[in-house]
Length: 230
Image (cartoon, rainbow, N blue to C red; front, side, top):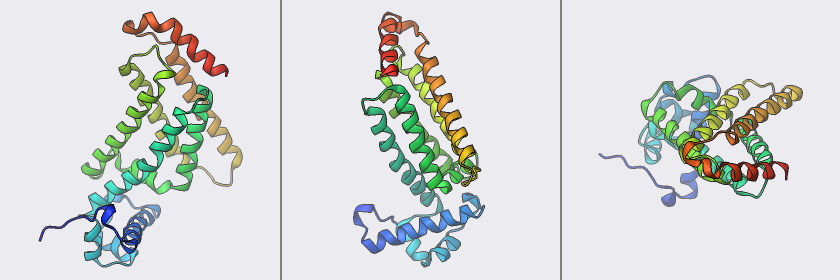
């Protein structure tokens, strides 16, 4: 018999609770040190308190559960980061506010990033590809949003800046997983270090000159400096 996945629109409130319970069960096992690739549908179902047939009403298998987790994380973070970038702030404020939002989310949902750290370069090929595509979405959206901040760069170069930015934040996320929650001094010190790293990336990018964009370079550089001082 062909298995189908219940779409969000078709879910009842009970169905949504079951779907969430399954996801939370997998996250709980990952929080105990398990890799996502080592989990089985049966143990996740048992921990969630549902029978295997209920699991299959929501997910075709473990790979699709993993995809749902990647979507859950990206669908929360991406629009909120875009909102910060699209507000009329200085680049300094955009960088700081974006990192603080990201840091707080990682601290509140560390298990998502345990999945990303463990599966991004190994494990399930399906999940690895999903993580890669989600990272690409973050990069593409940022490249679009920061055009006003870096008008002197071509889109490919601007995208390289965003690639470096996103990977810096993912590196920070891996480190955050080991932060001691009670060590506020370390948290503040590390936060300021990463904010500075990201500012260096953007300030360095402002000094870069693409051959095709040189006619606009002088006016573009003046624009970003005015935004930085505001």
